[in-house]
Image (cartoon, rainbow, N blue to C red; front, side, top):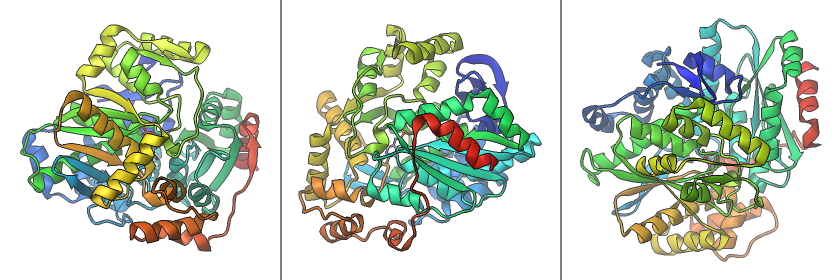
Length: 494
Ligand SMILES: *Cc1c(COP(=O)(O)O)cnc(C)c1O
């Protein structure tokens, strides 16, 4: 198995090369040329494995050139700091509705699953490809990726990490998490613009040959920790298997029973990992793509028209405030096998702001299990409130969008199959929005909000968030988006 670019299937690289480059030179994303398969017996046997062992089993075949022993040392180190022994525990709401808590890692969002692995995969990939350069990782973040990447890469030898986030576009707790980051190899920039501006700025830097030359002279190569990197996507496939294994173990399902997954979606990475799990033999039924008011994917999966010429909304689920879902490109390529067509659609998106897929491809996506629903702010708040009232369980706003989408699907399809909602963040990351949704008084100050939420839902805030109180702010620069390349050069070559 190798990897090819979604925009040029004749461009072939190894897993290590795909991880180091992040993005293909033609602007495409790397995809595997094959799908590893797990038998029903192998899947059943996963019930008995620790999360680290299960993850090594699932991820290794997706990283050809890495041994299982090697990957196991990575997963054991990556998932050791998680605050729950199950790493990705399943919480039962009722017989058919389960929540996969993916927020027990160091930064309290699901991004930790991949970004505790990537800092191990990148240095290993440098070794495998015989490189000697310093790797500079640039990240555009809508809030959670940035912190998870900073935490994962802080003080990792041979790596520097720089993060760009939209000024005013992240929650107060998210901002503090990044602004207080420790480590000698880290830098954080707020930009005047939204997430798409940050992501476009980073993509442009990657495409800038002059910049690459200037950095190369200093022995530095750029790479990406955004979910366009295969090293981000592969680790996420594992927790779909872990959810299924837990449902088997607690007797909710029998081997082979299909399970639907509802996934709060932004860049389409998390849900695509679920589709890879399905291609690898996991009995995944529907893959419900849940969006907030930025419902471009709901429209796309309904009509086949991807049209980004629309208003951008800031919502209380900021990690899903995205109009360009990069990982969708992978699915388009893998379902058509036509890299020239994908390149043409992406060029159209860049130039005209829209593209239209064929009716046949749209139908194929539905056959693969993809469905989409969206929830606006009022609906999200209603779901947070009703879930707390009914089940005494606090869902963060992203997860609430996911549960709403599941409920909408069930109502429409008259279906009540065993389902898992991926819970992508701790509610304490969004304390202000939570209090608002739960119709509680909202204190002015961020930490007072944490205290108030602790009191109301009778649960302690995770230590990494509570501890922010004692941490000094190190980064408070706000820059114009046009100056991103210069800021990167200044930082890396000074
Ligand atoms: C990143 C993120 C998402 C969206 O995940 P994608 O892989 O970008 O689709 C959803 N919820 C939270 C809390 C996130 O941090």
